[in-house]
Amino acid sequence: MNLKRKNQKLLVGSISLTSTVVLLVASIGPSIFFGVEQAAITNNYDTGKWDIIVPDDYKNIQEAINHANEGYRIFVRNGTYGRIRSVDCKDITIHGEDNKTTVINGRSSTAVYIKADSVNFSGFTIMNNGVNDSLLMINADDCSISNNILLADDFYDGTEYGISVYSSNNNIFFNNIISSADYGIEIGRSNNNIFTKNTIEDNNQGISVRGDGNVFSNNLLKNNGGGISVYSSKESYILNNTIVNSRRSGVYLSRCSNIVLKNNEFIDAGLNIFGEDVSNFVHDIEGNRVNNKPLYYFRQKNQFTVPSDAGQIILVDCNIVTVEKTVISDTSTALLVAFSEDVVIRNNEFSSNYRGVHLSYSYKCSVEQNNFINNTFDAGFVVSGFFNRKSNTWNGNYWDSRIGNKRLILGLLPKRIIGTFQLNIRFKVFDRLHFSFLIKNFDRSPARLPYKII
Image: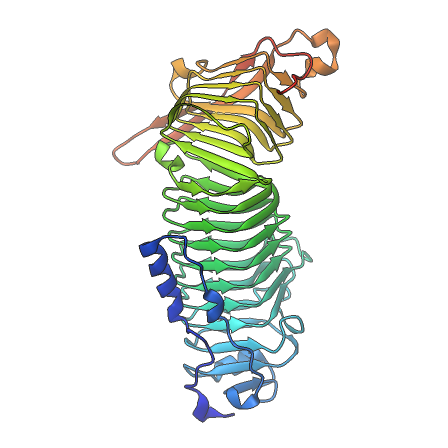
């Protein structure tokens, strides 16, 4: 071992770049380009540059970590190794020779567990066989996780996670490939982490987030059941990502506030927003495209007509709006209307979407003479207050899912639209309790044939 070199640094920019980037985002906004590739570990196979080499000095990685001191750098030659039960020495580097042929197999346990600060981990294929995590971080700050391939093999009947991050802040995740898990990345109670240039594909859920100030930039999410789902979070950034084939929800914001969503490309995917208060729908959203068409997000704008070239439309706190002659398909929710009134939705076609039209706490809206074709859910609504439950009208729309289209004897039956009656009660002890009941509205004169959208 070459112990006298233990204080040498092989990082360009070092881990202090994490907090620097987060401060830059907070101070000058999301338009900056995140050069966090400079935080990736430089490949250098010169044996004189490393304090410990596996298996030359120790036969497995865990034994090498057990003998490492703060500031050590560990190089791991190609081969297959057992799981790393605990990385509990801070400010160490663990680097694999080649991320395709340097393999850590956790089998039925967590493959890599990091619980120390300033750990730099790169260059591995990390596998687990269907239980626990490929890589788990708890109470680990200022780390860099880069250039790894994380795979979950559902050999056992369990829930697989690619990367799990809990109570860990100011970390960088760069240029990793994560696939075949139930959750590609799971983030819980963790803030100000940066995820950039990762590929997340073929997972049931791409990224699930609970925490503030996290940044997701220039990632590719492909063929996941859901793309990026953010829960009860604020002041996070979703920038320049490409999200493909996550029609249920490319990005889902649930009870969030002040999320910056800019310049993302959605293909067979889109944006969904959920919440019981108008503040949950107030975000900085611009420059996004859905299936090569604009995602239009309007807030507090009145008396206008939405452009007809939309790939997706979201209206928040708007009044006296017309949506007509649009053709929207292959997205998460074609038209989302939230906390708005007097919206006329007429002569549009909504086809092959996860949801066609959804009215969320919006009233006195008219939905008439539209085509609803091959959507998973054609339409829905959420209302509060008993007298608001039928304030929206549905009239003369074509619904290809209507049973009367298939059985002529039932052709006179109305089309039923299922919605939710939301009862929100405030208490001194509890901030708010929510009670939901299913209710119905009706299109009583549905069209027998689809309209020609001109």
